[in-house]
Image (cartoon, rainbow, N blue to C red):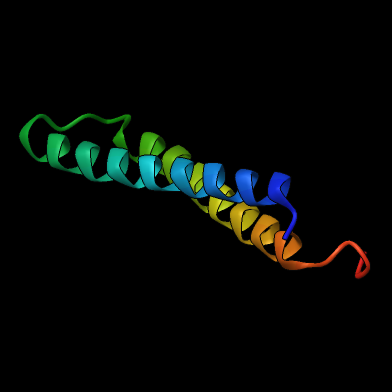
Length: 70
């Protein structure tokens, strides 16, 4: 295990979860007070969440490698 990649993967997964919570919050707020900018906010949050999730998975894969596998 490589601790630097493990730390990065945990941080990336945390960012993805936070973006997911913000997506839920903005969708509930949109029901009460619709905004024309909501789709752009959702697209931005979704893109950041997907990128963070992909980066987290990549770092998790790199963390599981032994230094000899590199």
